[in-house]
Length: 306
Image (cartoon, rainbow, N blue to C red; front, side, top):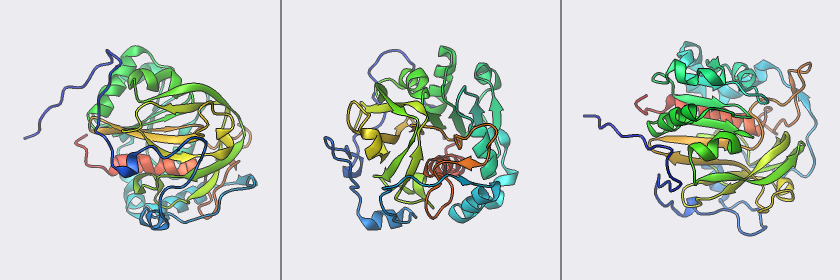
């Protein structure tokens, strides 16, 4: 017998979803020190390759669709076998002003449906497993409640960049917020500090990460629940909290949220659609892209009752 869970509402600021984490879930960043806290075998267990800290910015590369598909075939072979037969409504992408996840999802071969921000309350999400909210993430309050209910009932939510301040902090108050820091829109170093297979299978421990102009830096409000997944020494110099967080995740109800500082798209100019400014060593595509793709695929493969 399946028990129905009443979804929490947006009222009030005290959110008490989840429980205190284990040692691996405790704050990973102490003061101004950005460091890997996991042993080498933890990276191997997550299906990751150990790479050196990026001291120089990578050379931009022209990355064809075949490179994205090859990464999926190698990192998630079981998914790649059934990718073409998946219901497109299982992944819903909400258009944004700045990020275009649709382009990267197509390159990866992930079936999806793209809608406008005003259509979210119209389509219903009963058959949807993963919801992608592009930067800037400007949505009405009714949509925020629908998103909150979606995650509480087992959905996976991926948000990027300015969606942090525009919708994530209102939808899940008390977890993370924008601390008013901004990036310079450049390529920074990226260091994985919590190697979990769900996010990093088939990726690398150190790479680079393209940030957009004025990407919003993250402050963690619930370190017992929010997991810091990747950080940057370069970004820390512009972060009021000196943490340089690039990606965070937290559970809410039966679902999960992943937020990226920066974009899922390849961040190229419209007339250079295959240009990638931050190809990662070994894998060829961006670490941020592979990380987000892993999250989307995990949401699709998870038996969450949706």
